[in-house]
Amino acid sequence: MNTPKPTPKPKKLTDNQRREKVLRDFGMTISDTGMAAAEAAAKKAIEKKYPGMYIPETRIARRPGTR
Image (cartoon, rainbow, N blue to C red):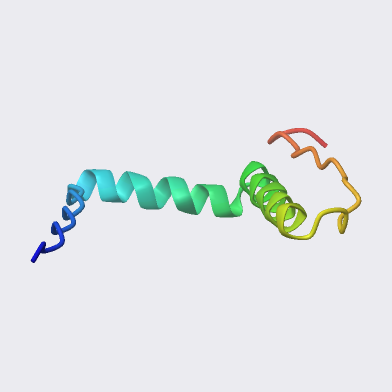
């Protein structure tokens, strides 16, 4: 009988790498750019699943320090 090949375990991140990843992810969740990217990704996924449901809108994230 053929036994399945074991899946390789993912490499463990060092504390510094883990900290950088968490800060980058957190920064993307609260920034205007991150919110715009997440919204665009969500619309793209829904558009792929349900074509023609969304009317495309363009949202441009504001830059810090501008009004």
